[in-house]
Image 1: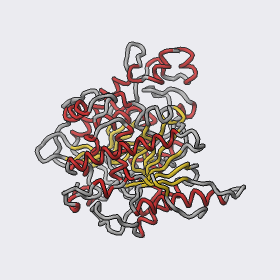
Image 2: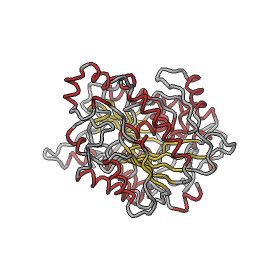
Image 3: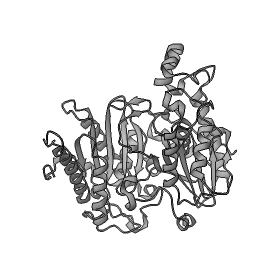
Image 4: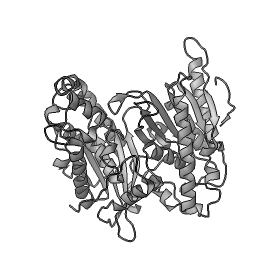
Length: 488
């Protein structure tokens, strides 16, 4: 890595095969092919929302599928913010959990729409049996080893002769059967933390071992795109967005129930001078255009309150410009502090993040890869995709080394590069294979956050993917205008 120079201080049941983290690439690929949903005649977008803060959330009680908890005033406010985020969507249907906290959230977001909300019993929160209603300290005191297993090995957690997480994954698959069978193009689903995790995971083919890996905050919004295949097979499924929250996604807090000791933040470079509205440019190393400059500044401001220890960047011009903008805001913030002592933010270039060299030998027609088409990486020729996978794997290990360096006081590392490479980094974080590259989507200027509650040697947790709310009027909206839905 090379140092950067920068200014100072300025009921068809889906078939699933368990995908374990230590599977070989061949086994994972066959598992992907076994995933099956009924074919779709038209594209469908499903937007998942977790309910707002509830009274038992605030008290620290274990809710499960009990129905004694209601929204707090903060929870209602969160639901209102989500309603505003989704106000322009032309939803055809709303599915919701029948539990009071979810029903109220759905009613706030659904607003004056005339269609009735569909209350689906399988969307209730995870069944936790004897745990339900207990404060967490009470659960630990009464159930000892069982509570410990719930914390450290939830997929094998058993209580009252039930495996709650395994049961939840089965319910999530049943939910998808009903949601996808509904005659609609844009569907709102309002439910709960654990069941929304299961819905996201089962959609893209991840089994119950991934519980607590894909976070769902109160009123966090996640988006899944289902695109029909011409041959009538199971649709292609892409996670377009994960956990876009009413508050900042980079605010430090619980991650999978534990404090995150380390964090990697992925910042996508902004729009460049050669980008078209619908196309990626791979062959040229271009600077940011005016929109890209605004996006980079907005990303820098989002990270303002973090103590970033280092910024690792692709050597591409647009990425370097974005990294410099982040560094300048970080150092300027310290200059304005009480001691007025600028903090040094180390900046590095990493060749393995260079998108230009990864696609240098590609024979693909760049104009055929629309920026916002879900799963576009599936269309990249295999050699380029393999190169992308291998390079992103090496880059991922370098990033883990960065946050493992005990000589640095900081806990936050920022990586700036092209969306395609960030997708590879996220897949490596989840211990997937290159067959999953088309399962994720990122927009220019977006931010994704990876937490490490067990440190860099532990399993990474995805706090959010493709967060763009910080971009304001220059962002790609969560939802789409009616005319875009017609084209999808």
